[in-house]
Image (tube, helix red, strand yellow):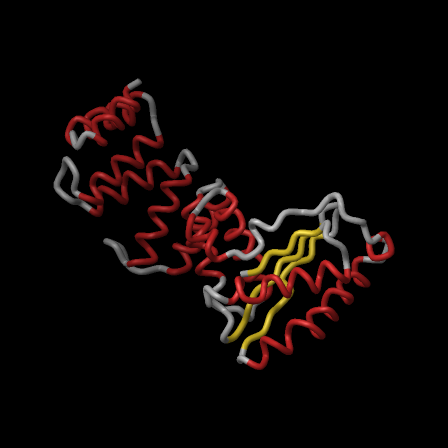
Length: 246
């Protein structure tokens, strides 16, 4: 009950009361979310004098309980040099841990980080998974980054049995050939390209693609070419597929 009371007090602007309730919960119930909230109060200077060192201490106490929000807030501190020496590796490690625990904002920030350099396929694969998770969990900016999120699977359409009976490598070659013939020439004219990051070969086939070059980060890129991408791939496979592109 004290945690709900504290949240109500915080939302009402009664920061000192929220502080006291969360301190009680952290001390008597070992409440890790209360620890995180105390860290945020000290970080923002709400109900207490702003104290970055105390904020960091509270976040670190919550790490003992594997709290995703604690990992996320510490990641932001190390990434943005907030009261600590900037440490990109530590920030990245904390973002990965928060993502693994299902933290939506951490997932989005991790995705942005890993998708900056669009040449490392392993990094792109990880970043794509993080962005897709954030988008499916409702993160508005992640949803804007991802093309194909609202494209339904046409389960009533005819299944291409000939394609689905091929080996994984044979399917991969057909997909790459379709991209080479129908999509890449168009993108290359504008200084862009596209890379197949992952092909998930199961009953509901999933193809994950990432734009490169001038197409990367362009908000119009997936709206302008997604239809061509989907049409090209659904013609060589079938419409019982999911195609995502960032």
